[in-house]
Amino acid sequence: MTTALPAIDTIDLILFDCDGTLVDSEIVAADAWVEHSARFGVSITAVEALEKFKGVNMADCVAEIERLAGSPLPASFVTELRDLMAIMFRARLQPIAGALELVQSLAVPFCLASNAPREKIELCLRVTGMLPYFEGRIYSAYDVQKWKPDPALFLHAAAAMGVAPARCAVVEDSLPGVKAGLAAGMTVFALQSEDHVLTLPDGVHVIRELAELPGRLAPVANLS
Image (tube, rainbow, N blue to C red):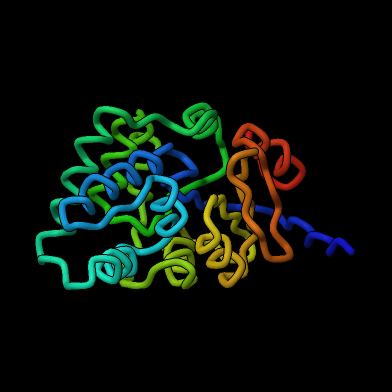
């Protein structure tokens, strides 16, 4: 039996995730995890890195590598990993299909709320040409020291933008992000492709590509 989706109320704010939603960063980041972890004797594949680390905060990812290594990692591990990711992002990062066109055309207010640190978010947006569309509207989990699936980041972003949670829509590609949006009391859209399918909780709207979003919200928000 299929559970009916909740009605979409008037949407006054869209909160976008970054990695995997607006920028195609996750396979690049996975490659960085593979290369950097190997330096400490940990052998993982890019597929394994994606499965383990997608949407997960850095501390938990590092804890998993430490578990696999069987010993603590040096304090420099995260800084060195982020430096490697930055090099790879500058060389390889691309926007998710339709992302740039979407943020260029949206009339309804929108912002970005990501588990990543601000420096990484801004780098990803700059490389893909989207940073001008999010100036002054970037919210990092490091601002609130709570990471998805905790809803604190989404609630913080909505409050900063002056919009009630019930009038917000979240666009996410990871299960922690989806859970955070639901816990925040927001409408949630999960971006899923043929090669990226999540087992989702009830009450989540699925889109196969970002270009679908305006049509899904058209009755309740001015996105044109």
